Image 1: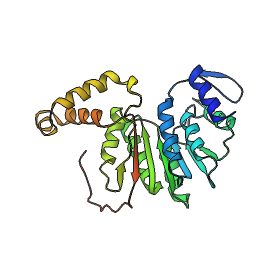
Image 2: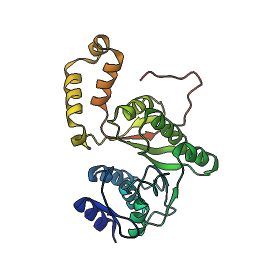
Image 3: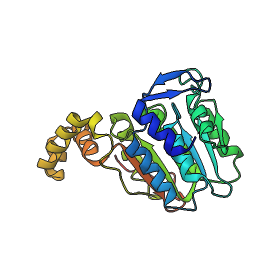
Length: 253
């Protein structure tokens, strides 16, 4: 089955199938616009060959990533998902195999264990990382920390669900890193899932000048409105330089 045929079928029927043909209702997926964003980013940079993904679920983001990598010499995609079998019935893996992608490997252990292992054992840096794992603030911070060390200069780190309060807080911190720039943002993505909250946040934050808002609002409220107005659902960082921060570095977020 071709990538295009499978993607069309999944989004049209809102169902996915495991290797045995058992059907499951589609949930917790990257929507099509988000998937195309990943595909276009990878397709636009031929130097992206080696990628890593935290969180696979039903495998739609994996499909878009692997479609972007196919036909590139030395292409490899590493997936970290400890619940791929228990929760997701190995559907993500079945979908990749159904499309004929054979250059991926799955690590069935939590990212807090898998990422340090990769840092110790990988002789080559990754070109691209996609983070869509456990969405607590601390877990997202940890995944971003290790991704920032695993991705080469010139590579990308893309994080999903950046309009979640926990994830947006982590993104706000990492956006201050001097070796990162925030690339093209998919600002239209998944607005329908948080449209009321984001609309209110943007409306309020747009009416109050930043300097006045920081002075008149409690820090927690000001930061929340700021992040809601700033970050879309998916954000791409590009690593533009080595990490040369000294041990005293800190930037408020």
